[in-house]
Image 1 (spheres, rainbow, N blue to C red):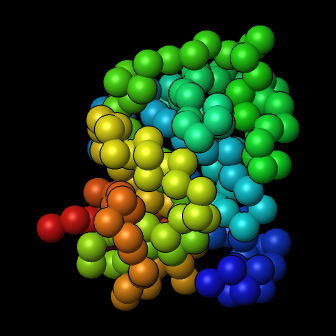
Image 2: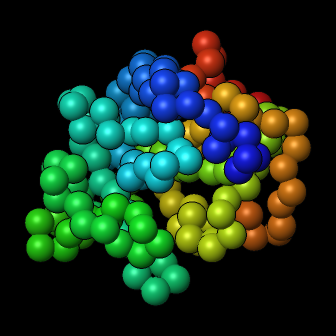
Length: 174
């Protein structure tokens, strides 16, 4: 999956990221949310930076040990380079939040299963630990080729409620 994603050109990434962004803006689950946990995209993930141009209220995770802390972020300028090379909220510019305030969670993944909405992550377990107790709608975000028939999962792996890949429809749980 990583090799397939690495083969995407910059134009393909931009086009597919824009389609994902447009699909997200149409989701009732986001329109009705007062606070959305997004993620600062890595090079091999859909680029969600355009979300900061919308009227959505956004938060981002920050790695603290083995856990994710949640911080309200007003601007991408409020981010620092953090753990694993991921842009994270600068605690001097952002406000730490209680995870219970989150109405929807945008979840990155290496791949998602079409039927069960199970997620293949990067192996650190950060999102699985967070999602185990998270409230709100869990929305997987991926490029179209990352939506597959089956992903390997373990007992502790958490799934999502729907997957957005920029195609014409959201893959939802039954």
